[in-house]
Image (cartoon, rainbow, N blue to C red):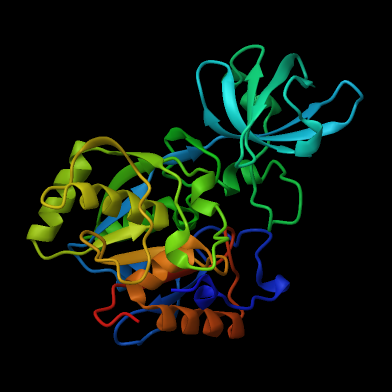
Length: 343
C-alpha cells in the first residue's frame, strides 16, 4: 500500500479550533447498512445495543508544554515526551538549533540543562528538581499544532475527558471528549456496560508517515494497562454475543495489541505495543469504534480504514466535508462498525 492512498483534501475552515458543547457534536454513522448516517453523539444510547461494552481510555493529559528562557532572553518551547528518571525527560524543543547539548535554560524557579539530542529530533533534558509538582503552575495544555491559537484556561477542562484518572498523556484521547455524565447514564439505562484501559497518548500516536510505502513506517512503542475487571468484562461480553465498542484509536490499539500477543485470552496488567494497524489486519477484539476525524496520510486514518475499508472511510470523509462536519481533536465524531468486506 502507498501512503498516498490515504490522502484527502481538507479545507482549513473545517479544522475545529474550539469544541462544540460537550455531548452535542455531530456523529457520522458508518455501518454495513448505511442507514441513519448523520446523527448526534447524543444518539449513542439508541445506536448501540443492550449488551454492548463501551471501553474508554482513562489517561489524563498533563500540562506538558513549557516555555523556558535562554540566558540571552530568547524563549524556548519544551514539549515533554517521555520521563527518564526523577529529573530527566525526552522533549521536543523549539527552536531546536538553539538548544545544543550543554545549553542551560531557566523556567521560573527551575533550571533546565540540555544533555543530548537524538537522531529523531528529541532532546534529553534535566531539570534542577522533579518538574511534575510544578506542571500545573508552569505548564500549558499541549494543544495540537493544527489548533492555531495559544491554550487558555478553558482548555484545561475542554481538552480532558471525564474519564481522565491516570496522568501521563501529552494529547487527549479525543473520542472520549464527547461524553457527559448524562450521556453515560443514558447508555447504562440502555444496557450498555462500560470498562476502561489506560494508554498514555504519546508522540508516537501522531508521528507522521514519511515513507512512500505504508509498511516501511514504524510505530513507537507505547505502554498500556488493562485492569482485571476489563479483561473479565470483555470475555463476558463476547460470550454473551455483545460487541466491544472502542472509544478511540488508543483503546483499539491497546486491545488489539494485547490480543496480538495473547490471542486466546486478553491479559490483565501492564504491557506495551508498537502495533501498526493497516488494512488487512484481523481484528480479534474490537467490533466497533467511536473516533474523531483524523489527519490525511496518518496512521489513525489507516487504522479506521482497516476496520471499515479504505474506500468506504475516505468516501465518508468526503461526505463529512461536504456536510460541514468539524475535523480533528475538537471536532465531530464517527461511529464505525467493522466491515466484513474491507477494501
